[in-house]
Image 1 (cartoon, rainbow, N blue to C red):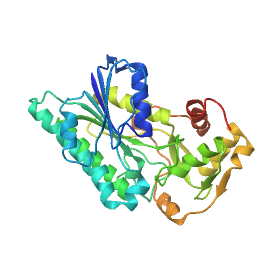
Image 2 (image 1 turned 45 degrees about the vertical axis):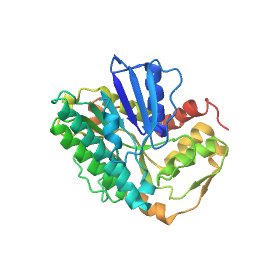
Image 3 (image 1 turned 30 degrees about the vertical axis):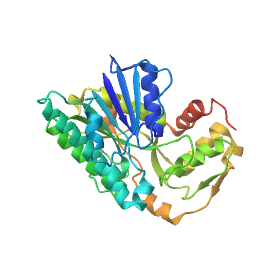
Image 4 (image 1 turned 30 degrees about the horizontal axis):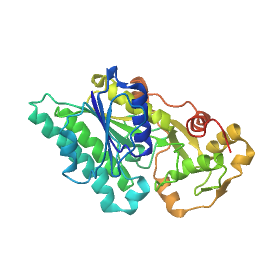
Length: 330
């Protein structure tokens, strides 16, 4: 069993590799080798019971994917992307990484498949996004709702989904695209994602720091924890894809809450002093981007196929405290 994680230096990629190292197997099969790549060389997880290689790779380089696929990994996790806010500001960069990078990877798998006479058909898990949907929205977005993204990032992810389904239909890969909710609470420092404030208003106050809230308390969004995101990836990599059918993109389950409900969950877990560290500072640019995002989903297909997330936002806050703060609040 060989596994390849593209985007392994990112938060979710790092946590995925750490989980693989702890368990030593994937879908009941012992892992022999894990290849971790990103635009900067990832850090190998400590204590892995299998061979780990790390490499700095630019997936926007057409020559990169064929080299990565030469080893014919059994499972490929494609997590590499630039985030929503950056993709909106940097148009060329967004398409080069989020679209061309995926297309080069799919094409490299096709060539290896053809070279093997059709014997090589890897499981390929692609992290898509709820940004593939655009307003106007129903109260809950079901599995039949159409793609109409209102951002460059959402457009790039939607095209990536369509390509994955087509390459799967042709038998070149066994693909699964998972539309991630906004991952919250993200550890570390704030990033360039327009959605970053959803994590900031929880993470910084819990760490004893001030956080800026750029949108109204009434803004509603769809969330899952980093812990749940890793679970989504592992399930997508090991599930029976015969049950999915030809529509290979799945909206992941999550928790739909308003910003006000986020804050109240934080208050219940950590108290008024922590909540008082949130400062309201409206940002018109972020408010405009967020206004075009979906809010709540009916993730019936994914749930029926065995994907699981938290039941409420308090669970998400507690998962962050347990996983990142050692169970302690500043």
